[in-house]
Length: 331
Ligand code: NAI
Picture 1 (cartoon, rainbow, N blue to C red):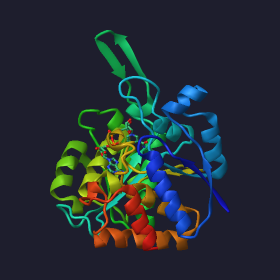
Picture 2: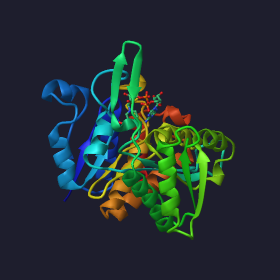
Picture 3: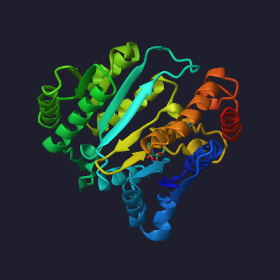
Picture 4: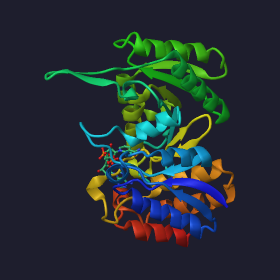
């Protein structure tokens, strides 16, 4: 039996994790889930929101499915998500964004991938209060991380038969840091003459994305722009309830949705488990459980296309439980 680390998270995390576990079980695949809790409750009990046992489990299993974990805003411990990516050197955050049949959106031809550098930039967590009225956050961009993510983006483009890579920065303002990111992207692009290489400023990208998203293919961005832009692109295909993601490193992969812990709908049986389910499908493909992955994929997209049993974020009125059962019925 394959062993996979599962971080059920908090907020809506446990509800959507239960849904996904049940669907995989009913699809006929037994997974040995190595359940590892993390977050605020764990910080109280174990002294850290991300205990070493979680990292050790992922290092040993090499693969994890992760539901969202709440990060206190403006105070408190450092984001578990950011720390996990850094600890395991999960340097590439890959967020494909493609229309799903049955979900009505203003655009019909969205098919792009956001590739976000995951280990540095303003997320390096180097901040200080200079005095009562001044705070400082340091943006770190290195050649090593920038070349590595650019190479990942071009390799991804080649592997997935994509045609174009846009490097996204604000290099007109952050001339040194984003300038270095761009220099690295240009340098790497030279090794991939078959892929069209383009550059765009992040503000212009946001405008173009909501006017004509189909012009974009692969986007490679430093951490902060990648975080923000991937929520925007999630909005293009039906919202956070369906937006998938994966954090890829040299040794391990952690599959997690774009969305957060949605405290506003926690415990109400309203959360859409689709994003985590798509992550689970990708996780199953990653561990070569293709047959089960395809079976679940087929059932999921059939339910969405039929549009009869959908959660409220997709315009339906089904509960998480009803939606889960509908997918199981279609397996
Ligand atoms: P959020 O993504 O949790 O929620 C934004 C909006 O989308 C809310 O109205 C929510 O109800 C809705 N939503 C999100 N996922 C949904 C789903 N599966 N089904 C239906 N509706 C859904 O973003 P927010 O409120 O900014 O962050 C809440 C917490 O989550 C924060 O502590 C944040 O730090 C954390 N977070 C964690 C992430 C992770 O664990 N990877 C990623 C993003 C945020």
